[in-house]
Image 1 (cartoon, rainbow, N blue to C red):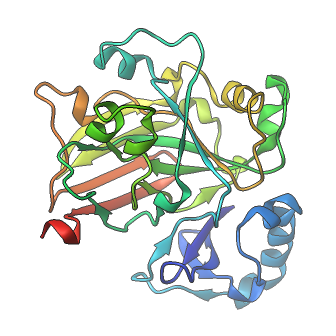
Image 2 (image 1 turned 90 degrees about the vertical axis):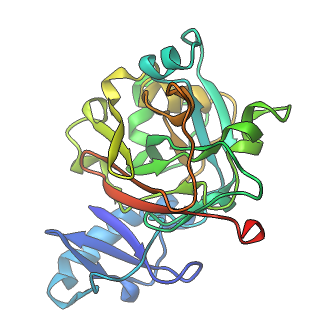
Length: 286
């Protein structure tokens, strides 16, 4: 299944994509949140759609899509997790996953604007494969880890590099700004993918392709990351685990290149759809 949420920010309603058409599922009366995933909501949803499919109302092509998951307790991210990205940054390959948290207040829809933080001069892009957790995960063996996946989603791990690397402390300051976690367009359940190991990721800025990678180059794969992170924190249903970005980020280019107002970022992953975000200045900088 391909799960979507539609409507105005903060008031999104559930939906689904069937044969390329988006449909409203307001009558299903459940949002795609922790309770939904924890209580076998995907099975209930499949049963509902099987019975109601002919009665579902299509969405207008212009309907806004929100993030396909509602109110995750956390976004956990892996840094430097592609061999080519670690090389372009001039860093050695990590011997253990580099893990950081991204603020949930950063979440936005797949086509919402990216708002530059006040005074930002080094905001960067990162196309990433993200995993949505389907059930409570604590001390999960790697061999069982994929059983904890509810689905996969496209994520742009937008990052302000000066805040991240030049302001002291951890990376979190450069990762959690508002609009810095566009998700979607949809959550694809595992049956929609042949294998997360072979997915192609790409991102372009103003029509120029700058990232073109493959999940086969992950240093630590999806199952390993779920198992690893679950040793340090409990992953709850609906949580988002983002797996890292391939080469081609702005800070890795020579010379470095960062986002400016008016830039258009387009990105996509095989089976997970595409997203398009326009960069805007913070109102205080206008």
